[in-house]
Length: 319
Image (cartoon, rainbow, N blue to C red; front, side, top):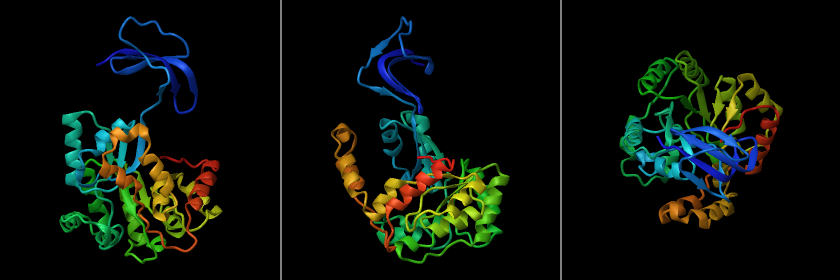
């Protein structure tokens, strides 16, 4: 394992900063952090103008088709762990093999297959927008849960795959101006109960206020999006508190849905500091808005305000 000393760097530990300090790494582990000098006889790097911070965790990704650039690129951008929020298990196997054989990758946490239902989220949207010629073959692998009794087998299959959490899809389609097939609350409760029996937390997709309240009332442990169709209410805050639930708001994704984030997307995609890390195709994807929001009055500002209120109420916000 490598050992070295970094000096003259700004250090941020997630809470506090040292404007110019030193970090000693021995056998691959940080052993000392100081605002002054550290006695060390080995390799030393002086890096004024640079910042050292903990590895970032991206709490919501989809490494579609087991994309081999996903995990190495995440690591290059300082993300040391990613949480895949729905993927075909063969893709997860590819990614795990890549981590084992290549090494220079972000760590992977996964739910493998989310708890999907026939033509429920996200099937209709993928059918409408995907150009993937293998999409029907991928859909054939997805769970098609129908009744609460299906929850036990679904969770047991995920346990065999070594998942880190269970994801539910609770999407009515309201934000998109559509009506999607949804799992019943009884089915969602059964999945949550089986997950908890197996020591797994549960997270859920929901993009409307009512869907969010309903799935929290069902007992889910966290949300993988914030809603933006209506402003937050005390009922929402109370629902989070009852479950001690967390929120991964995905504000950039919501800005893409409403198109309000277009300017920010363009700015980050063309930042001169990252041009060597983004091929043209990836830069185009960063700039492209999903533009699926059809609900009248919906705005990403509702999501920002919800994050402010939930954080003030002591709810954990994870990014």
